[in-house]
Length: 236
Image (cartoon, rainbow, N blue to C red; front, side, top):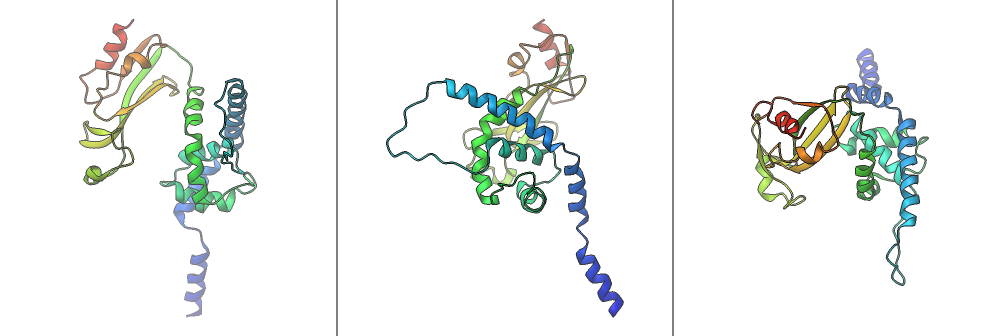
């Protein structure tokens, strides 16, 4: 009985296998480099923002503020997408709050951080445009669905009401968006576009390829073979 009790208590002290695997993945992220790139971008954006005329504030207006800088919020959001965690709540509560206090001394609660995330959405989109790769003359075009909810709950979905549509691909029907991507032969992102799921794969190609040169190929999709590549080629 004593041996079994000792073994049971030692098992309880062991971290779950999944959490240890997630920690290994997160440890491979260069958080310092990500933060430096994001913070440099935020400083440049703030300098440009101050030069643009702003609307006058109303008397007695209170502007919301946080002890966390926007660059810190953006870094954490980017780190989550490279962490391997399925949900942001799991990543923030199980990994961030317990292990990243030295890197982010002004961390807030999970509920407060969720409130801060919309503040950095526009900056994240702008920052993504500065991370595009080099145009090598060889490009690959593809699209992937992004479901906003389970198909059975589509009729009651309200978060993206009016923005998402039903779409169908080789896998089946899905309700949400469609992400269109163009990468080079090194796997670096060149262009992207987010559309409702019912948009034809060929429709956003002209705008996405207006600054690209060379040849393009498309992966296997619901479109006719090489339809996207032919459209890109027709533009010269």
